[in-house]
Length: 144
Image 1 (cartoon, rainbow, N blue to C red):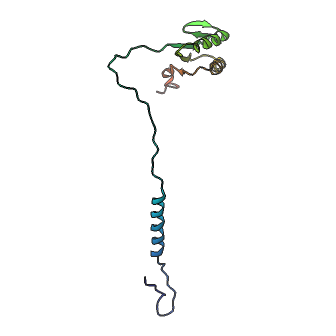
Image 2 (cartoon, helix red, strand yellow):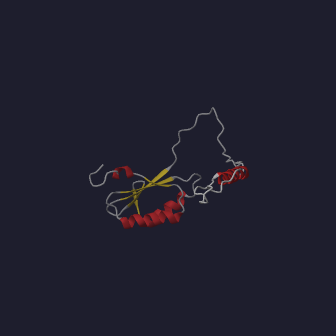
Image 3 (tube, rainbow, N blue to C red):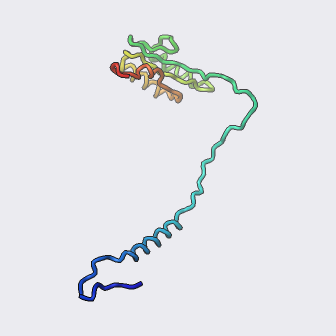
């Protein structure tokens, strides 16, 4: 590799020789590529086996809790109080397959009652819980 020390007139060299820098960069890049571990991890998924038997069209059980604007708690269209709600939730946990609990407050239902009922549901240990009827509130203030 030839090195230039500038011109013969004694002025300093103004451009930098980048060839050694590129050589070092390429060596480091090759070393980095060599030292990367091989991706050998995998995720095992148990897929169901195909069957010729027809699948039953059984809908899972659902319970619906509705909060009315008058402050009532409805369990599957039957008015209950908070202690009965706790008892109903504990009873659903004893079933072999836990039914889904659907929560739907009416538009003018009390926020305080909604918060209390949600705390009761959370404390009960129910794992299948969902909010339903939200599509009714898709538009806000007349804007869709």
